[in-house]
Image (tube, rainbow over all chains, first blue to last red; front, side, top):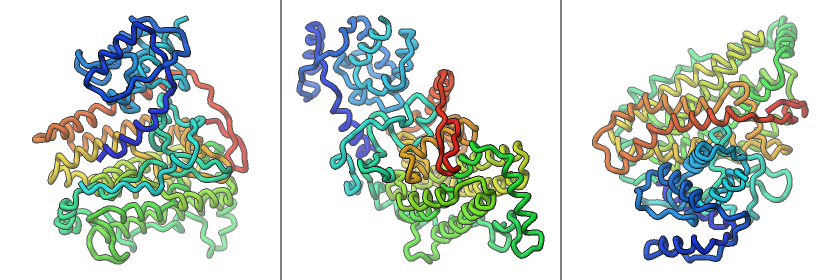
Length: 129
Length: 396
């Protein structure tokens, strides 16, 4: 019953901004896309400064925990929350988890624009500057 | 499953997408107050041309209940006659709006009106915003009777069908009709509000309708109405309490009487769902989870007065601040229903059913936590005009 409505949600998130990966992230991206997903790998242009790998890793961990994903599941900077199975409530709780972990406070407008792990990590770096 | 996707009302192709300004952010209590999803999908969209009411833009799903389940409701007709109709009050024993209003046939009419207006003068504008919002919601009754008649297996096929379900729906509508009438007359006499703007709002709202995403499915439908009746019971109970605080005992009686009707209706609808849990626990828990994931949208979420594109959000914010209806209430209602239907004790569920059970049982604390965090933030609430009170300003 819910599947029809769920698909309409993910369509709108496809129009997210383009982001560029650092070289180190490209490696992770190619691993995660191997055989599992059919998503093309677009060029992504990072607008903010690059987030540290540890930050991205911590974000992945928080996302994994929130969505109760197995430890070996592929989550990278590219990963979209919605594609990982997060609904809107999960996304809010992820942001709350990030606030707690990184001791930051996220503006409501910023919170709404976060749709991927990378975006979250970038925002955290920006707030910690 | 015979799923028919109705794309007729899908607006997203025609109109440019835009970020809804000031729409309930996920982290404010408004997340659960306002209608449907905010961040991932623009479900309510205003047209580009000015002064148009909002409309639903989610894909409208129809007939999601497998047709063989319609049998269940046919077979429950005797049960409904014995157990559901008992919650209706005979007309001869029912209160009528006139019981609570100045009597036009009496010599004391003008004095009674004067007293009513004097009491109303002592009541602040923000209270009236909450009361008007509630009144507008009640006055959109045609939409709710329609909604009940969209449900497979229980709809009133002719408008005078004699199935217990149809009898219930008509009688329920008749009882609810008094609520809007009473509040309308009170507000009219009070002199505190701009009746024309309110009447306009009602005309827009009935024209807009609503899609609570019940998909012609009585499982979803009765879960939705259970939630709503309890919500209105709480809301009118709060306006009653506040009226008393402001020294208007008669208004408190008005709101309290309406609240007691809602309580009786809540008892009826929750009984139906209880029976569904007994007959089809897996299907019912899946339905419960589905409605909660989609979020219970408020019936008047498309309200519009020709001026304010975010009228419902503004009204909700006031209702939240006054404690008339809050995010906390949303969590409380959910928790109540989980307990009422003994969802945690269900056994023999499918894997999907267990997931649904876990989701629903785990949801109230998540909502509470969200709400606590939102409250903990220092927010500057804006002060904005409401056309319902001649553009006088009220703090959100």
